[in-house]
Image (cartoon, rainbow, N blue to C red; front, top):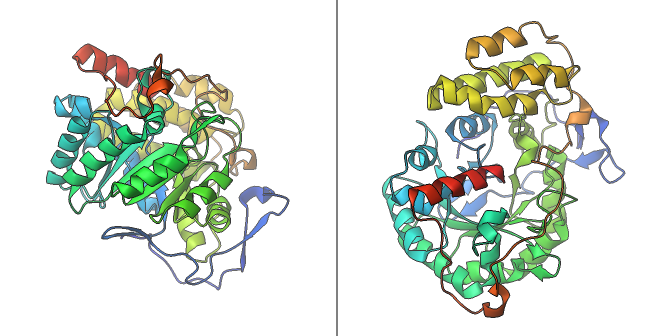
Length: 416
């Protein structure tokens, strides 16, 4: 596995201070990793170090952003969710999003589907293209997905989940297959324990748990006790997901839950250098402080150039608009600045707008732990009528098939 370059430096302090003096559980200090305290995340023949995974996020973890996170020190960097049916039908965007840039190893793709045949065929193709790891999304909370019995609704039917995982594992051969789930639908319908059992029985190499329910979306605190409970129930590695905003959070999560690795999602939006801080903390070194505004702008512009090279300038700059909001969050005058940045059309325009900013402005501590979710509310999860009456049924729900249905489906996923 690749790791970030190291340089000679003085011995690190024995404790890492949360950046910006943010107090975590009443104590702004968290002990640094001791030598040998944490091990690489083992996924069959893959040894992931640091045990830190970039979460698959729709509209976010495309190849350019994965490259940034890899260069900053992420151990594993998963593609955004690719719909199996669209991929198999040769949808151009699905094919592009499943692709990788030169040097991306291990190559990791997350797939979505509710038909074992589609998933098995897609995994076989991905393995044939040299993919090193495949993840199955069984945690999507988007209404359009759950209303058809997909995403986070699938673990309600363990026999159906078993068929899906089994089809992928059989097609993957020696390539590790993992599964990502949520706690359940809501607090009355928790599914993570059954999901862990099924994943292990069907040969999955690990299971990732976003410690919120589908009803929570991204609201409230993640329930790390569920991660610990799942770890106590299964023999395969467990990856914890939820509320990793700083390096200290990852260390706390692994110590509190016994999980084998952490998944980092919203905490790295507009902050890919978080993976450098994580790598340093797991190596027992005091993490670097976050960059001042000048360093942020350098990364922002680098990210924009990569998006333009990958998608073309017009599409790349359209994608960059949301990123400018995340990168500049919390800096002085950022609200007025974002009003201009969310209309950018070209790299030249972006650089012109940024040219007059105070590059020495320090990173705002208030932006370290602020939510970057699409809204902070909860939802009532919609399931197909009668879905809970047939939890032993293993019949795949109908997913999108036509080009129009697939386009609507993809738009819904991007919204979630």
